[in-house]
Structure formats: C-alpha cells, structure tokens
Image (cartoon, chains in turn green, orange):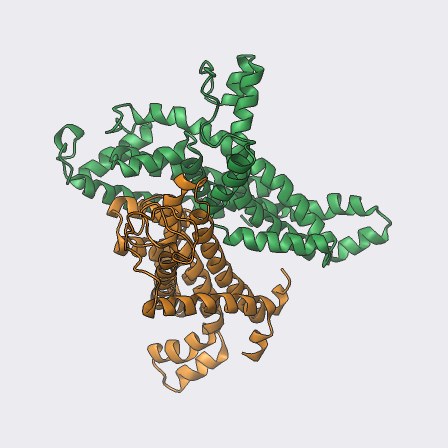
Length: 315
Length: 273
C-alpha cells in the first residue's frame, strides 16, 4: 500500500513546479487583467489549484470554449486509439514473448529479440511516416487522417465513434471508423509491443527455471497446461508492470501519432495549445496527463496485487 | 575490455556509432554544399550526380543537411550524456554515500521528475520556456538526469557499505576522497551503461521535439525537424522522409546496442535477455 502512495506523491511536486512556472510566463501576456493574471503568482497558483480540484480550467484563450468541454470531446478519441493500440500490442506481445521463451534460440526467439531491439530504438514519428507511405500512399488501403469519412455525420452520444455509429446503426460508418483506426492504432501499438515482448520473454525464461515448473512437468502435465497454468500466472505481475509502463509511453506516443494522423484527440489538442501559447489549455493538459499517469499507476498496482496475493503485503 | 570487444551487440553498436562519429567529423571539414544554401531552381530534385541524395523542398542539398544533422544529434547526445554524468552520477554517488536525509530529498526530487514519461516532461519544459537550441538541450538533459541517478545511487549504496570503505576511512581519507577515488571508480560500469542510455534518450527526445516543431529551430538541419518538413512531400520525394529517419534509427540503435553489451558484461546473469 505504501508503495502506491509513494507512486502517487511524485505527481504533485511536478504539477506544482510546472503550474508555477507556467504562471510566471503568463504574466508577460497582454491580456493579463481579464484573465486574472494581474494577481501575484502565488495567488494565481492557488486559484489554479483550487479550480483544478473542482475540475474547472477556465476558457481556452484561442477557442473561447471552456476547456473542460473541449476535453470532453477530445478524450474519447484518444481513449479509443489507445485502447485498440494496447489491445493488439499486448495480445501480440505476450504471444510472441511466450513463443520466444518456450522455443529458445529458435527462429521465433531471434525474431522476437531483434524485433524488440529495433522497436525500442524506432522513433515513432518516423515509423508512422513509413507506415503511411506503405499502406496509405503506395497501397492505398487505408485513409491517412481523421477519425471517420467526411460523408458521415454521426449523432454525438458518447464521443466514441465506434459506439456512436453502432447506435446510429450505420454499418458503413462503423466500417469507415474502423478503417481510420487501423493505421494509427497499429503505429501506436508497436511502441509498447517491443517492451511487452521483451518483458514477457525474460519473465518466462526466469520462471521456466524454477523447481515447481520442473515438478509440474514431471507430473506429466501437458506443455500447454504448464505454460498457461503455471508459468503465465507467475509472470503476470511482471507483464502487468510492463503494461503500466507501456501506457506511459502510449501517452507520449499518442501525441506523436495524433499529430501525424490528424487524429482529433488530446495529444494533438495539447500540441496545438502549446503552439498557440494557450496557457490555460496547456496547464489543463499537464494536469490531465498527470491525472492519467497517477490513475494508471494506481490501477497497475492494484491489478498486480489482484493476480499475486504474495505481493499484497509487500506493497 | 577485450571481453567487451568479444560481445557481439556491443561491437555492432560501436561500429555503427563510430561510423556516425566519423561522418560528423568529416562534416566539419567537408560537405558538398552549405546546409543552408538554397538552390532556387532545384527544389525537390531526385538524387543525381550534382546533388547526391537530391534536394529538399526549399532546394537545399539533402546530403549536406544529413551530415550536419549527424553533428547536431551526436553533439546533443554526447553533451547530454556528459552532463548526466556530471550531475546525475555525482548526485547518485553522493546520495548513496551519505544516505539519510540528503538521500531522501534527492530521491524525492528524482521521483518527481520521473513520474512523467520523459518526452512528455521535455515537451512541457519546452512549452513553458519556449523553443530554441538551449532550451531544447536543457529539457532533454533534465529528463535524462534521473535515469543516470537511479542506477548510480543503487550501485553506490552497495559500494558504500563495503569493508574497504571502512578501511579507507580508518586510514583518514576524507569524504570527498572516498567518493572520488573509491566509490566512483567502482561504479564506473553502471555509469557507462547509463551514459549510453541517456545519450540515446537525448537524441530521440530532441528529434521528437523537432518533429513537433518545438525543438531545434530552422535553419538547423535537425533530423526530427527534417522529417517533419518531409511529411508533406511523402509522395513526391520519399527519400526526404526515409533517409533522416533511417539515420536516426541507426544512431539510436547503436547506442542501445552498446549499452546492452555493456550491461551483459556488467551482469553475466542478464545475458541473453
């Protein structure tokens, strides 16, 4: 338990630091008064913190919309993207990692290791451009930007286009939304794939050496049973930790991917706000990303405790 | 050292890295053209005998820009690695050696920096301080220090509790002397590993910031910035996009291979992971 609290605390000082510095830059801005920027930095900071805790971030300087409203539109887009990215990368990553560990020094093993080594070094933005070049420009299979074809006007319900178009009972809209999702989710997922493959593989290799695995094998259990019942269960904490880490990468990856694919999510919104020097929006963006990281850390810790009772007391 | 040279991944990494160092050094003496020279009638040229790798959208020679880009990326990588050694390793050794309150405070600060993914934090620092060469370097340095600090601290903690430190103290050595001539040399392997890691993080983050248009400003031919310019011409001139990216990937790959190799030598148990 204390561990998760320590994980929670660090979020705060960073926010403090950035919140304050962001405020000091603001004082230069011309529109000081009507934005409440004529007050002292400490006051501004206190106001910001107070508002943030209530979920109020004021209006965006650029669009004049309340930031909370803007956020409500953008976050489902990012969530949709991140969900599919983590889905495919964790499935493929775990399967590939297991294959590599079980068939050590085989073709699969070398393939998985080189894939994850290159994956670690791969700049996401370049990977995205390569993928666009092959699948969109050369083969013309998938669209390059946006979330859905312009011809579709889906009534807003949840902001998740797949769910919305499902409700609208528009099959071609679902198809269009899926088609738009494929490339960005593929690119975004490859970042976490490298990490998940590597961690799964090394966790499996370690656990395979344990005595209880030998016992299980000696008992005459089928290899698949050993893999899933014994090794996989024990490798879960490490895989979950990797997933938590991968989520952090995903957050930065989303900024890149969304910018390249013109995906109208939080990442692109954040970059646009930074470019436009839209300080309230940037502050809110920082706050939201901290919040997401804290939540993810918390969920990861809890999930690890859930799968491994032994660690419950340690944490 | 000879063992290290027998390590395959270290050797490959070293080879690629040396190639880039060589290229960057050559670029000090010779480039086909100036990296900022605009040839007005030669925008988006295909590779030819005149422009070996073609020209970009403004008519600047791609090869020259790639070469200078190698200088920039390597320079920033090595600089950040160096600063990380000076600040991160010093703090790490000191907090491992002293322990107690000093240690606690530094650990908390580092935790705070590391709570966010490095690129996100670098992005926010640049967003607040504004772009430019200095601020970019500052932000990528800031995020790389905790990477160095953590490992060095844990190595220093182990060393500080060993008997030879007690005997050194019994012989009357000062704190500074113990840290510099006993603990630091014994932590050199983790420091080297992390220097390579910091270097590759710095190169990647700089390029990412450049790609988002927040890093090294024009006209400097930073590879990330070049990629961002090239994305408009992905159909007409794909070499503008493929080449800077490939350079970036190879350079980052080489530093990571070197750090993997170093780590294998440091801890044989980890071999083959």
